[in-house]
Image (cartoon, rainbow, N blue to C red; front, side):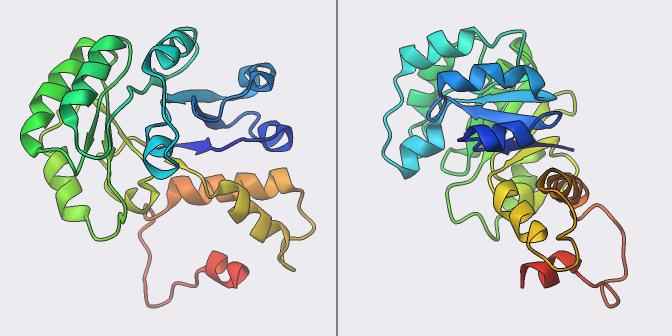
Length: 229
C-alpha cells in the first residue's frame, strides 16, 4: 500500500516530505515546489477535480494538459480531470484530451461505465482511480462491487479512501491529514522528544499498516486515539 501525502502548501511541509510519496495538485501548485519535487520518493499528479467540486475552483483543462505533460517520466501516474458531480461524459472527453492521464470512477457514475474505463486504463499506464462523493462513510459494499470489475493487473488508487485501506485490492490512497496527525503526535507528552520529521515517519507507518495487522480487538489499545485526546 502506497500512501501519497497531499497538501504540501508551504516550504516547511515540502521539506518534511523528503523521501516520502507526495501528491501534487494542479489546483494548488506553485513554482517554488519544483525545487522540492526531486526529493520526494514518489509523485502522483492530481488534476484538482475535488477542489473544483469543493471550492468551486474552476480547472482549465488545457492549462492542466500542458502542465501535466511535463511530469511524464517523473511521476508514477497522472490523473485525468474527472467530473465528480456525475457528468461522466465530460470526464470521458477530458480523459481523451489528455491521453497520458488515468481515468477515475466515482460512485456518482454508473457501474456500467467501469469496463470502458478499465479498457482505457489498460491502453495507458494501467492505473484507475476510485472516488466517492462525500460523505464517504458506509460505502464499502459499493467499493467492493466496483473493484470486482477491475482486473488484478490494473493499479487501483483510492482518492481519499484511507479509511478503506483494509480492502487489499486498493493499491494506493492519498491523505491530507498527515500534517495535523504528526503535529498531534509531536505535542504529546509521550513523544514530544521526537522531531516533527520523526513523528511524520510514525504517522506514515500507521497509515500504511492501518487495518492490516491482525489483532485481538478486545485487548487493542489505540495509542493514537489516546494521543489525539
